[in-house]
Length: 320
Ligand code: HEM
Ligand SMILES: *[C@@H]1O[C@H](CO)[C@@H](O)[C@H](O)[C@H]1NC(C)=O
Image (cartoon, rainbow, N blue to C red; front, side, top):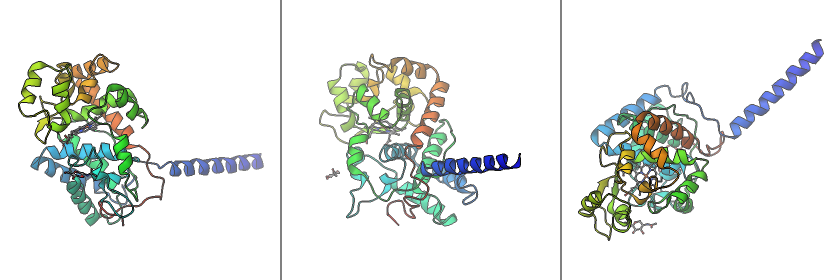
């Protein structure tokens, strides 16, 4: 029976090579991607983020939001980090980011430290994914397995950023559909919105909510109106007013108390499909932490670029 079994082995090998080619084409991510090529990577990023968060805890919020805004535009490919060129406009100036997204210099600095130890090896997209994770963890949030092996884009997509990143004036059905377009469920959407347990927002993004909506707690409305006129402006308020720099479930307790800062925040608890989940997260920090971590892994896997396409940028703001 030697010949049938050798032909069987042959077919098996052929099938295996087809499967591994398919994995490469779909852009395979692994937590061990840099284990041999840059064994100290995790420590470099962790210590840089710890230092940055010690200097200013909002750095964790900046980087988490950058990662979200990167992944929602052409996948997690560091396209948000590029300055504009003659060939494309920068996402830094797209409506959701202009005068609002921060942390670019921090990611550039962490990338420079990585380049010093592991030249031309680690993508900016992976540096951002690791930094977002480490920032959340350093403010007491959950940890998760950070998948690695993303490639950097060779263009930016400003028009897509304007279309595909959710806005604070969106209602629940629009929020659900923008996340669904990325393969993320309403549950993922509600868990990921818990990113708003850290950081600040500008008056121009919450003025409409505190002046036009009637579903907010009156004493909360009164206190926010004191720092924010109907014309907007840049005055800042914490999105989670209870613990703005602790990564916990207080954001959801705020929603239950009708103290959501953005219209889009309070949409998650306003008599719709996500009410029960918001109430569950508000009462059960472990449930929130687990779902947030799982949804971050899912969001972090959005359209990874296949095997050798794109590039490993040397400087995150410039093409090689
Ligand atoms: C659900 C739809 C979402 C909408 C409509 C939204 C909108 C916003 C807006 C308008 C701000 C304030 C920006 C400013 O005033 O400059 C903000 C801040 C922030 N967002 Fe979101 N966001 C959403 C989801 C997310 C997700 C999924 C994450 C991360 C997992 C996230 C993380 C953050 C963080 C950390 C901040 C604070 C940044 C800072 O301190 O500057 N957001 N978001
Ligand atoms: C970004 O904001 C500035 C104002 O700070 C404005 O002058 C500029 O036109 C905005 N850019 C875009 C592309 O909208």
